[in-house]
Amino acid sequence: MLSPTSLREAATDEALGLLPVLRKLPRRLDRIAASLEHGGFTASMRILANESDRQFVSSLVGRAVLAFLGATLGIMSVMLIGTHGGPNFFSGTSLFHLLGYVGLFFSTVLILRVVIAISREGI
Image 1 (cartoon, rainbow, N blue to C red):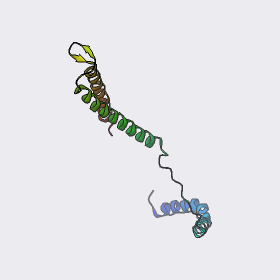
Image 2 (image 1 turned 45 degrees about the vertical axis):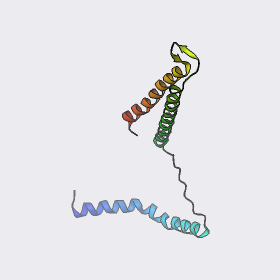
Image 3 (image 1 turned 90 degrees about the horizontal axis):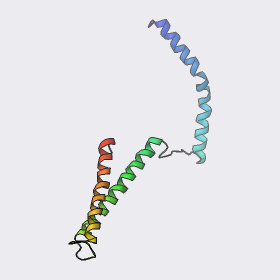
């Protein structure tokens, strides 16, 4: 199989198969050189052409938005818990405190969703 005659025949077959491509090569090079000379040479490239790239960017943006909403809701909830006064909802608990605790719960849920998604799938 690896005798000199079989290698020569294999190389000859490959060269014969490449002849049509090699014949068209000078014309292509001339067209490329002419378009470069006239300033008409352009290259087209799409940044998010692949579906997996789009899904990756979409998941990153979604996680960033959820984390931002969770952090913002947590900060607002802590501020509501620290607020004195407001209408009484239960004896000793104002409506502001109740809304603060509910908001803190939902803030924790949002942030835990982001943490679990990152730990399952990676960044």
